[in-house]
Length: 119
Length: 116
Image 1 (spheres, rainbow over the protein chains, first blue to last red):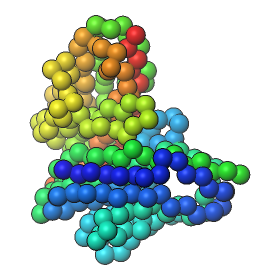
Image 2: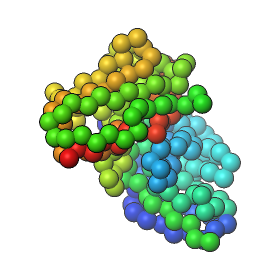
Image 3: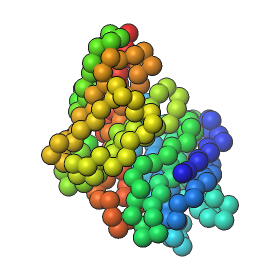
Image 4: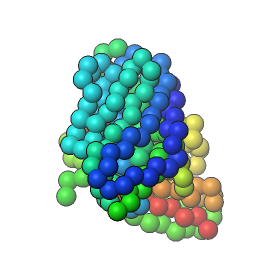
């Protein structure tokens, strides 16, 4: 079972600035991954970035990076050089698996953080 | 377009009617998932399939809900005797496989259901 906490209901950032969205999790699964999704007002969930629990390096994907601290059970998303199009809801979601890394399937989503980018 | 597709995108129905939604996953993906999302909340897992087999069902999936994936390709989600509480966005996702790693799930655009 997983529990996910996103403590920031809303965040504001100036265009071109960096912003960090917080995510803490609790899981009893032997292996797991942390997924971040973006949901604009259109409603579609867009995959952004993934961090595996056994990955030693923090994941990066373009302007997105993860600040993964396994001991603290946190996986914060950092968006650099914010753009107006980044305004959306952001969800952190852990996915669990067995010791061999086979996925259990479902993702558990947090409450989300609404990011607003100001010009 | 080779992404996940869902049909219809919007459905308005009267309480007590039955509705059926369709999801077409990315063609080479073995796993297919259904989630429900109400306003202001994150998506909640409903069920998922690996090929034709339905491997897990959430307790949220009452007896009025049924999902199928008869040929391991597209899936349908049916809600019988709809209630106003069923109003939500129904999201479908697919992922490549169920073994060898924690696969990324790719979502479709969703079906927004409104029960009057």
